[in-house]
Length: 153
Image (cartoon, rainbow, N blue to C red; front, side):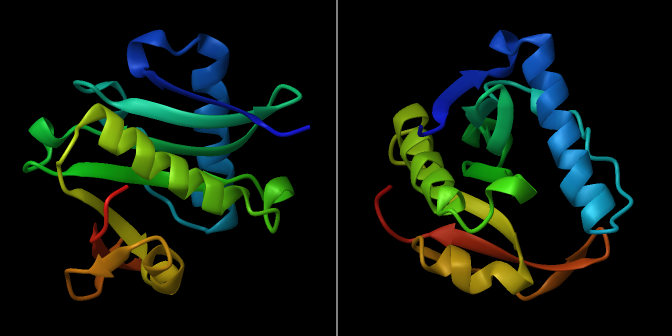
């Protein structure tokens, strides 16, 4: 059975959905990647932030958030891109990126789409049409590079 996908604004998240999102982000970004940072940066509940999720059997398998251009220098931002450890290697991450680009285009047509990629994933995001637009920089102790979508979503 394929996962069920949903994309919804923060105001429509259930308590259980929000808990699952924050738990998965903590599990991967903080624990697995040994990165001590404040994940809850107030952007989850800002403006028109949307949350794209893939669920299967009550488990959150993939997630990202979409930040609106009006609050981000005119660029839609795909962030907190994550695939649950149990779902890695299944192609779910690629489907997440395809859907994230589609949702950004649906929500904010003709706006540039940006993401701050972990540098080690530059080629992964490059395969989805993103090109580097910044030099490498450190964010929360991990090398990152700013990337901009160069194709229609």
